[in-house]
Amino acid sequence: MHEKTHNSFSEEVRGDLIIVRGVYIHSATFGVSGQCDVLEFHRQDSGVTLTGREGQWMPFPVEYKRGISKSNDVDRLQLCAQAMCLEEMLCCNIDEGALFYGKTRRREHVTFTQELRDKVIAMSREMHDLYKRGYTPVVKKRKACMSCSLKDICLPELARGKSVSAYLLSNLEDEV
Ligand code: SF4
Image (cartoon, rainbow, N blue to C red):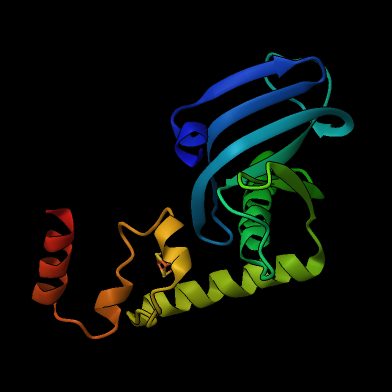
């Protein structure tokens, strides 16, 4: 589901709604970049102007997740970070976005509160601070790692003190 939305850039128009997939986003302020699964533009007076389109359009990011809504804020924080990137890129304010959960096939609306925004800012500062210090935080392999899109590049097993050769060996064994 995630790969389908990320595969390539595409645009679809449905009346007062424009659906764009695979948009690359970034923020120079927070030093983050990424890609939106789906970026909707809803025709709205307080929105932004888009090249080649009449009227004003309000950006509305939508992130696709495989499972169900989580009790913690990780998905909401990711979506809020996307909105903050888009605000910087498009010079606008975005109040809302949505998370779509594949298991329940439901959309959950997310309001980008100041509290959520403050957490995104604090976390991006922490991330840059860790990077500058060259410190990789120890992460614990969890059930969620199996469905995480970063699992191929995130190596929690190595961080637990396993040697590189032992890690490679166990992964090679998994492959055969
Ligand atoms: S694979 Fe890495 S980034 Fe993904 S959930 Fe596990 S520890 Fe976190």
